[in-house]
Image (cartoon, rainbow over all chains, first blue to last red; front, side, top):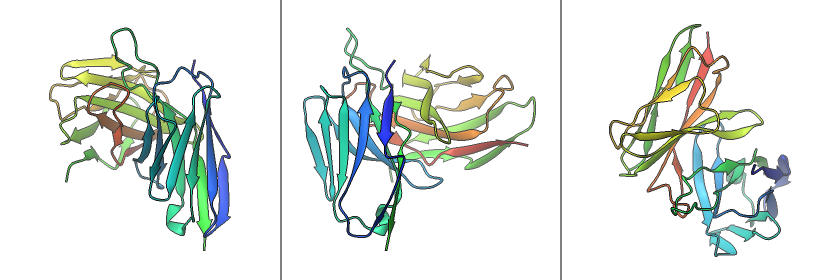
Length: 118
Length: 114
């Protein structure tokens, strides 16, 4: 059974720091990996989706990398801002079955709670 | 704007009562999902639907039921058989269930027991 772990569970940094959030998964036979942001009491906002054939994706100040062989992904946030404060979750997609479908059954990590203070 | 609408935002259930959570999307997505989020446990899949009139159990389907009569709607019923229903419920959709399609989420419904 796939298990996804995110380290650290919580992180507090001063504004302007570059930071790295970690995500590890036990079964390297994943298809894709998606990073989300969740604000308190809100739903999830998709940040980046890394296809299995890719090693990284970038969007603005965010960069996510994927190393399937080692079962790891990292989310790099450059020049952090107080508005980046949120919970960050990673989720992995299982490999496709013989029919080409994985049913979108994401397995989520427990998240990293990020606080960026002015 | 295109998106996923969940209602109500807060819901209270009495003992022995069934309650239904609404999820509507106008993204023209085929696939829809229901997740449950508990503190410190991440999200767990309850049910998913690949297409209208079809749905499959997820990892924690016991005590829940769903229907998918219309493409844009995927309501979740929390039955009295669900003994620990207090949680944050999230609905999601994607273009299809193929893995290269990102999932998009609503703002959730928080269910509590009276």
